[in-house]
Length: 177
Image (cartoon, rainbow, N blue to C red; front, side):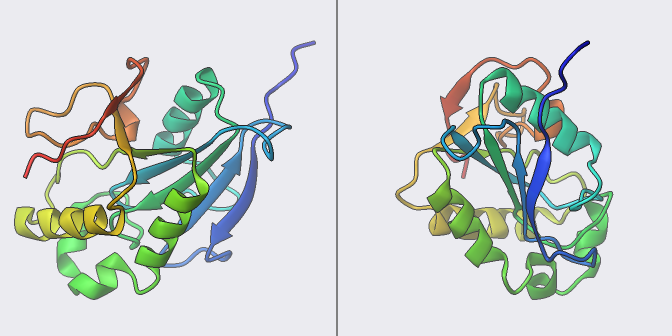
């Protein structure tokens, strides 16, 4: 009989499914309290919640599991949930970012052993809006060692978590702008 790995959502903020998601914390191993913690900063939350995963979360978890991370902390540039990035243009900028988002980005980075940026290309988000938010998040994380998985995209952005596949090990992130 095959023993399946542990996957337990430890925390989802907010707990109830709504228009925003600020943080999703997932335990990957029994010894999660003593194992390495990985914070991943993606573009925006899709459908993953305390009770449901989505393709990006699944891909990142598989990658992290192969590298023996015990806990994942997911945060995003923008906190508004959307299965596609383009609708983020329709929201007021402050609403799309989310009033509590910066707090949870800083919290995730502070709790992690490794911080990976993985937001990918803008994919329809207004480039000025997208780059503005990236600069804001990078300012929040000043002093942290930021890393990426694999080569940057042709546009210089860190590769999105959905595209990690069996990418090589972590590399230091250098901002394109």
